[in-house]
Length: 148
Ligand code: RB5
Image (tube, rainbow, N blue to C red):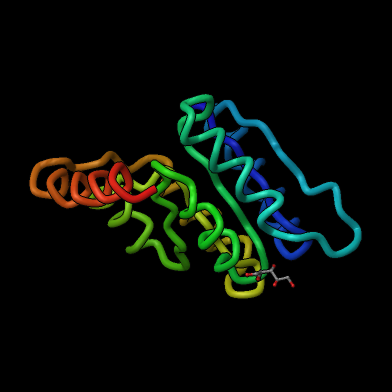
């Protein structure tokens, strides 16, 4: 698995925590910034990473900002992206199992590094269940094909 990761200025600490986790798990990753001391705009990081996941260059993407909201809204504008904004371990498991989410967004002003690490670990290691969920995801893809 190849993971693309990025954050804005509001998510730098959790980004470092998740990079350490990825290294521990032996998962290949690339960090797409930000290299920021000052304020940056989250779409400038979310959109390129989402495009890299949508194109297949990376299997999954992880985005962190202050709330995770701006990153998830931006990433979900890219066709083929199912970015889940997650702040609990139950949802991390459910969104992989049920939604086959290919991107994870978290907010550093919402949760601490310990919980972020558990969420990311669960999200990275939970398999998509398919079955009845495939039909639902198919309806999203069908809409994207017709409208985007
Ligand atoms: C930046 O101040 C903040 O708006 C951003 O990190 C994020 O929370 C947006 O959704």
